Image (cartoon, rainbow, N blue to C red; front, side, top):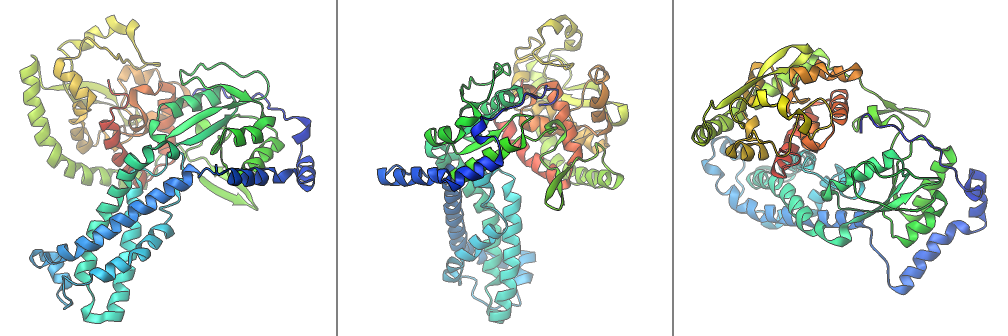
Amino acid sequence: MAGLQVDDRPMALSPSVADATDVASRTLRGEGTRSVEREASSVIAGSVRTRPSRLRVGATLIADEVAILAASLLAVWVAGTFDNVPVVSRLITPFDSDPHGGTLLFVLLTPFWIAALWGFGLYREPGRSIGGASLTDALGGLTALTSASWLLLIAMVFVLGPSAPVATLIAFWMLAVVLVPAARWLSKLTVWSRSSFQERVLVIGAGEVGHTLAAKIGKHPEYRIALVGFLDDGEPRSNGSGGPVVPVIGALGDLERIVDEQHVDRVIVAFSKARHNDFLHVVRACDTSGVRVNIVPRLFEVVSSRALVDDVEGIPLLDIGRAELSRPNMAVKRAFDLVVGAALCVVILPLIAVLGLLIRLDSRGPVFYRQARMGRGGKPFMIYKLRSMRVGADLERFELADQNDYDGPMFKMKEDPRITRLGEWLRRWSFDELPQILNVMKGEMSLVGPRPLWVEEAKQCRGWTKKRCDITPGITGLWQVLGRSDIPFDEMVKLDYMYVTGWSLSWDLKLLLQTLPAVLEKRGAY
């Protein structure tokens, strides 16, 4: 959403709800109990609707229980094979427990594992987050199950001594860290697809920010969101963001009525300038109705989703990070690239060899394509890619400049005539990017970072957008994960800024995990 003009029109409330004093007086008169009365009438009519957030938490809980029970039953069988595993066999040697025992014990321990997952917040995101739980929750599950396993191991050894079923516990841990994320993913893919799991969302503010937000939500069906409409006082702006057509269904004073009539589950406040009492009214009305509230912050263009929050006597302060990685962080990031990159080379290099043979059979020309890209600190380097276009395609680019489908200095065409038959397939599945692992090992690129621009494209970056050149470019990153070519250039630069200000090693790991689903879904790949 970088480069957007913030909608700064004031949203005036009707006099009846204009100030906190009037809200309080209405509550004393009993008007604040209307939602309770409406809920009571719904119970009488037998039409109580369970919130999708509760359904999502319930489905996740059931998936975890099934996975834990399966791990408990399989652990006994797997533990019997540890005698032939060198490292594990030495760990279990001091314990003389029956490796085939302990089935009932581990089944009865199911509430313990659920409590551990709950304690680590693994049931918070499915009900709270707009996107629900994600693949990256597997990291949280790994931490929770590992910590609980260590705690249980200590308790077992202390109570049972040498007869503690250590082998079964190790087997259970190995199975659970795989089965729990898999069960959650399967539940999200199947059970969550039901209409009852779909959140009904109301957006307050039909300005440019509101329409942009609606367009972004429309691009992500995996969010399982149904946009009910906009609320706005005054004349709303037209939808110029290319997103779904969402109607304006009322003014801010109609909030409580529309929330009740439209069965709204979540309200997103997407205006940039409003009176303090406007926010209070929205929060109080939604809290009374049990509706979740999200607020797009002012200066959202520079506020990362990973921004830290300080507190001064109850007033939260968002910390806007610097657009520069410190030397220690750069050293950690480089070490991560070398370790993970070396492991990936074992898989990628043989695949490159096979794809190279197919390229030679498909069209004349070299297997690899080299091109100058702008690296960190404005230093150009030669990027490696598998050739997906015919020889001489770079020279044809200027002839096709008027057919550019991308907004900004970059050149992209959805139907590019220069692409070979095999090249189209390589691009759809991002296989043409695989040789960039060599750039990573040479230190010219990172596994995660901003997209490496052409030298001429990078020269067109002006002002604060030049900050992206201070970061080592990456094979994948926020831009690639969130939509690639579907994201405008200005917003891509904003995402690069967000990445560096909120960088952490765990975020790099999460983005790597999110890259695989993005590639499989072929988001913005052409």
